Amino acid sequence: MFPDKSAVIDLTRPIESSMPIYPADPPVDITAHADIEADGYRVSTVTLGTHTGTHIDAPSHTEPDGESMETFTPCELQFSAHIVDCRSFEANTLIDPSVLPPLTDSATTIDLIIFHTGWEDAWGTSQMTDYPALAPQTAEQCAAAGVAVATDAMSPDPTGDGGVPAHHALLGAGLPIIENICNLASLPNETAEVLVCPLRIDADGAPARVIAWS
Image 1 (cartoon, rainbow, N blue to C red):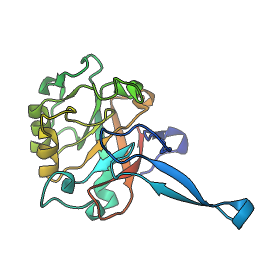
Image 2 (cartoon, rainbow, N blue to C red):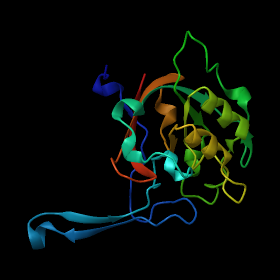
Image 3 (cartoon, rainbow, N blue to C red):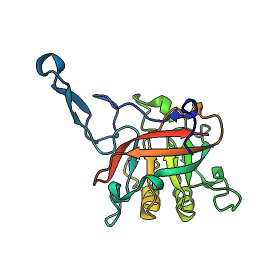
């Protein structure tokens, strides 16, 4: 059941012109196409990549036969999440599987792990790409349990030329990845219900509004 409005926490970054992007991704630009003074109404032209700001990766992002974003139903994008505090991990380190709660415990229902790295505070700085990423085994354990992943960092994989093993493990299992969420410190508990609302688009991912409540 949807919660009282006062209980909803927005985990979404605003989309703005010239906002931070993942290295080599398309820049973001929002410009006026029509304005009230000249045309009597407003329309804007928005240019951005599918992985802009707070967004969701579809399997087709890295998997040749992966599903597109539009194939996910709203029910498939509502999750019972467990927040894992990874703020003790330093820059450019790997988050090992020891941080994970039991993922196959029949007494609990977890279908999303949120990795709280604290790297949302580095947004727009030179340290933004130095976030702690997931060790391949961590992503593999989530994938094996059918558990999707979200992070407040730019990616579950490190930036650079080391490949994307976490993406392959999760997206290869048909599980979405949510990146660049924020405001996790506002969540009162280590568990939350999360609803991800991306654009319904035939693409490899999409910007999304992500909300949570406990």
